[in-house]
Every structure is written in structure tokens, then in C-alpha cells.
Image 1 (cartoon, rainbow, N blue to C red):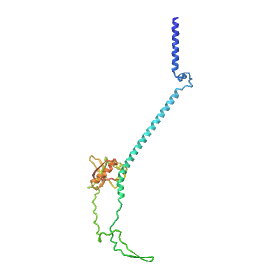
Image 2: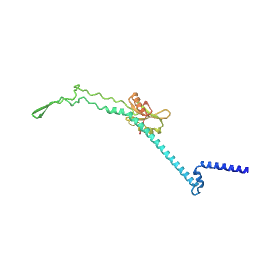
Image 3: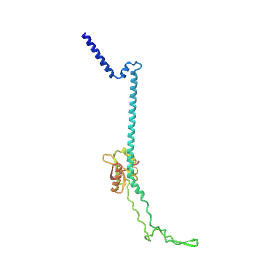
Image 4: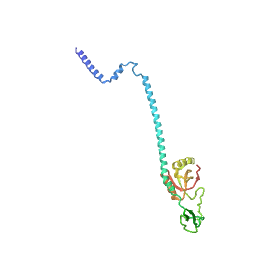
Length: 244
């Protein structure tokens, strides 16, 4: 009798525990147990969904790579535009100075101008005398001819003049491409300067721009190029002419 009582108590305990556990289990888990094999998700459908997710992930990675490449190109274009704007800002003051210095008025008289003669012009009610005089008084009766202008001797390779070496030391094969990059970067800053290719120790080459009148002018020009983020150094204007 005692044995059956113990069995009855154990059965009641299991019933209480099962009731509490069933309350904690989600309803969806229990409903899945009662679903038929046609109503449940098959393994093939799960595999198809997984393959679709993998394909979408690969597509997202490809689009992300394209966006990163476009961002890099935009950043490079922005850097190039900033350098060109800096070069233009550095050259604008010099261009404005050159434009503001207009031609001066020539106050000298020519040899064909002599003593002005009076002229009588008929007018209503009589005549009118017209006297013409020069706008500026002549400073001297006899104006001597100006002395001939002495032209400075200039050799083809620019010996005896100063120039500026721009950019790093390069190989002979890189001269053309380096000059094209410098011309695009500096723009109007190097207008009027002729490029030469100078030899360096170790077989390297260096692009030299010039000529400059003296060392001070070469140093000033070098400072303008350094503001455009281009390495520069004054040096003698010697080398072989660079043919674009």
C-alpha cells in the first residue's frame, strides 16, 4: 500500500512539473509539433533561402567595392582641383599687377610737329580764329635720339642665368610624363618659362624652368611654386631643351 502511495505522489509531482513547463514553452513550438509535413518548412526551402541570402550578400559586397572606388576617385579629383585652385590663387596677384600697369602717355613731341599756325574759320556774323597748341609743353627744342638698347647675350642652353629645379629626380623615361603633370598642376604660374632637362649625379634627370634675371627672382618664383605644393630649388639654368 505504501508503494502505491509513493507512485501516486510521484505521478502528481510529474503532472505539476509538466503543467509548469508547458506554460514556459512558446506556443509556436507546440504548434510546430502538430503541423503536417506539407505545412512545415522543408529542408529544400531553407537551402534555397540560404542561397538567396548568400547571393544578396555577394551583391552588397560588390556594390560596396564600387562605392569605395568612386569615393577614391572623387577624393583624388578634389585633391587635384584644390592644387589647381591654389596655383591660380598664387598666380592671380601677379597677373593683376601685369594687367593694371597700362601703357604710359607719351609726352614727347615728334619731329613732324612744328610751330602751330592760326586758322580763320567763317562763322555766323564774322570769322573765328583757331589756334592749336600741343597738349604738353615741350621740355626741349632739340630732342636727342635715344641710345640704342643693349641686348644681353643669350646662349641656347642658358649658361650664366638662373633657373629653378622643380619636382624630384627622375629617370629619362619619366621626363615627358612628369612635365605634363607639372604643366597641368601649375597652369598659368609657369607662363613664359622654358623647361630644360638637367643631368644629376647618378644618372638622374631634373626639370629646370627659367630663365630668371638673377638669384633673387629665381627664389621668388620658387616660393610661388612651393605655395602650390611643388618642390622647388634655385639652380643654374643649364640643360637640354625639353620638347613637349
